[in-house]
Length: 273
Image 1 (cartoon, helix red, strand yellow):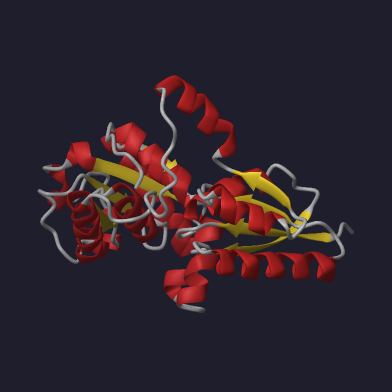
Image 2 (cartoon, rainbow, N blue to C red):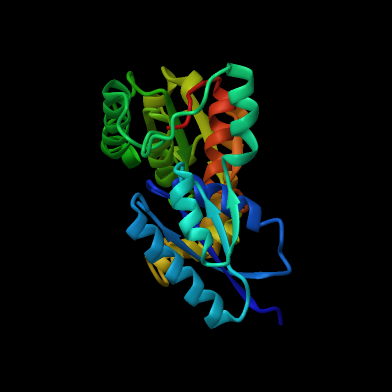
């Protein structure tokens, strides 16, 4: 069995960028085991020295050189952390010099711009989108006029987390509609959705996976029985086919992939925050 290698996502801000890139990198090395940790808001020499000590200690504990995925913009802080002896992977390094050369100017190493509140209008749009997703969760509100999109699926197929993700990362007003047993008795859209056909996107899921999820929520209930799950999923998929609603299975799909597919299919173009 391979030795566990410590990996640190280091940042002078939230660490979201370093962790996102680092995670994508680590998934390329499936024959290794990584122990990851995020060190955020390393924005002073003292904090950088503290981070270096933590990283060095992890290397000694595991008996292997740590890896640091670094998004600190201040090279002085990065140099202090590098004294830990770790492999330093600067996420910006490959791009800074070509950009400076192309733009004819030097970068401004300002901390916190990537995930700070630089644009209050954008920030409030994101907050409003999150509120919208929560108030339109599982059909709690049926006013879909302001919705950018509506996810339709049986219960526990992934509607809510996808809506929240779309709101948080893209500022998209995403609502969701849970297909009830009454809805599934017919092979046509519920009346409340007909006026919003162009906003609809269907989510489906393998019945065995759905049964596992429902069993955790309501153990040994009719709701969680495999036959119930099979019947509901089959009826929902038949409805999507009959109404020509674009559909995606969430069984083996990450929430990031689901969100990207939904936006692309519905032609919604938003930059990630």
